[in-house]
Length: 269
Ligand code: SF4
Image (tube, rainbow, N blue to C red; front, side):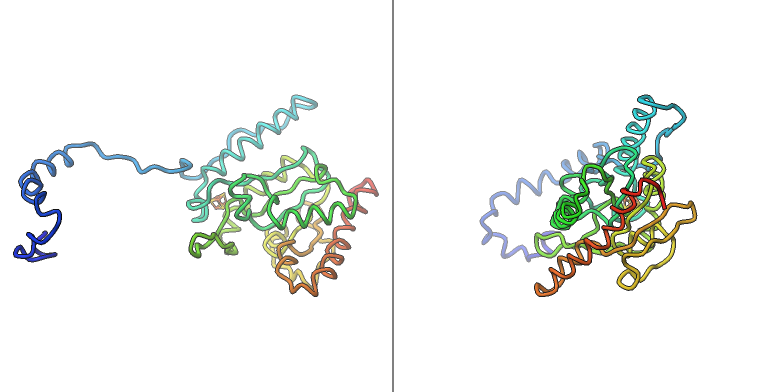
C-alpha cells in the first residue's frame, strides 16, 4: 500500500521514516486485533426509530386530568418527532421543534419550519421572524402567550454555506410526510381557528396550494370545519427592500387583525 503512494527509495526522506519499520512489522497483528473487535454503533444526537410512532393520546378525561393528559400527549408528540425520520430533514437538524403556547389556545399560528435559532433553542418563532411576529401582535394588543405557535414541518431544513446554516424550503413531499404530526397537534390543542403564515403552512392546513400574495387576509374553511386565515410568513417581510418594509408590516398587522376580531367576537366563524 505504501509503495503505491510513494516508491520505497524515497521513504528515508520522510520525517516519520524511523516509525515505518516497526509499524509495518506489527501491521498484521494490529489488523487481526481490529477484525476481532465487535462492531461499534455510530453515535447520533437523537436516536431514530423507524416511524417515530406517537405514544397514547387518550383525551377522554376532563378538567385537570384532561389537561395533564394533553400535556403528556404533547410531550409524547415531541418525543416522537425527535425520533422521526419519515423524511430526510430529521437526520441533520439538532432537534424537532414542536409548538409553544397554552393548551386550548383559541388561535394557533402555523409557520413553515423552525429556523436556525429555533433549531438550537427548541422553540418556534424565537428568531428574527418571531420577533417581527411579536411586534405585530403587540401592535394588535394580542398577547403572544395566549396564542399557540407552531410550524408545518418540525425539523429545520438547511444547506451549509461555510459555517452558516441557510434556510432551505421543505419540498411538498417533506411537508406531506410531516403533516400527520401537525394534525395531531391541532387535535390536541383544539384551537377555534388557525392562521397560516406563508404558502407551506397554507398548503399543509388546507390540502391545496394557495396563492398567498393574492389571497392574504382571507379566511378559508378546512374539511374539518376549522377556519384558516392566510397571510405571509414574517420572514418574507424581513427579505423585502427597506423602503417596502414599513408598508408590508402594516399590511401584515391588518391581516392578523382579522384573527383578533375573531377572538373579540368570542365565537368561531
Ligand atoms: S421534518 Fe417531520 S416528517 Fe421529516 S423527519 Fe422531521 S418530524 Fe419527521
